[in-house]
Image (cartoon, rainbow, N blue to C red; front, top):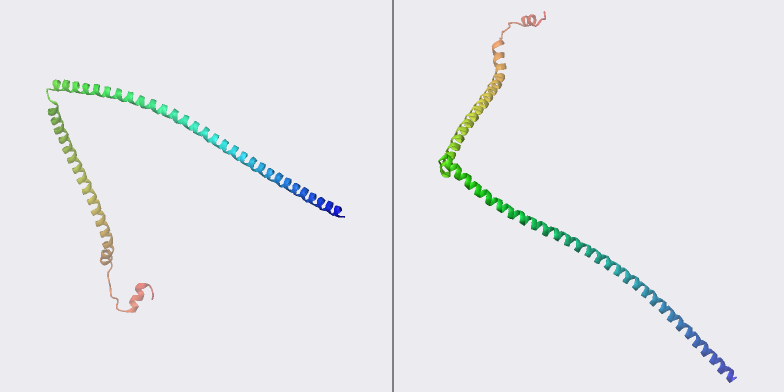
Amino acid sequence: METTALAELLIGFLGVALLLGFVTVGVLLYHRHRTAAREHLLHEDLHEQRQDIERREHRITEREERLDTEQRHLDERAHQLGDAEAELEVRRAELLELEAERRSVLESVAGLTAEDAHAELMAAVESDARRSAAILVRDIEKAAADDAERNARKVLATTIQRLASDQTSESVVAVVHLPSDDMKGRVIGRE
């Protein structure tokens, strides 16, 4: 009996050990499965982040290329503007020389210096300005007088219209005293 009890006890221990083994294997498989799932999610997340980084790098590269192109265009434009500015300076110098030459020719032909010609021109301009101002003042005074006369006529006409009815009624109407009511009836048309 003891051997049977011992065998049963040994079988019970083996069953518990087997059960513990199965549970341990199950737990290990579960953890391995969870770890694999986490690892898969991490790989997907890492893959998405790498793609995002690659897209950003691609955009940055394109942006840098555009900026480089724009910079080249701006440099070319600045160079063209510098050339045009230099050409303008040369032309400005030529024009100043031509102006000085023209002035000296005019002075020799007119027999006047630039200052004398300027003084004569200023006197002529001043005379024209005075004449124009006098004409303008005369026109303004005439317009003001016409406006004043027109306004005065309006005021007189309005006044005459207002007072004419009173004056007319006083001049045209005559008051006659009738001695009796009988007479009044005859005038009105009653008998």
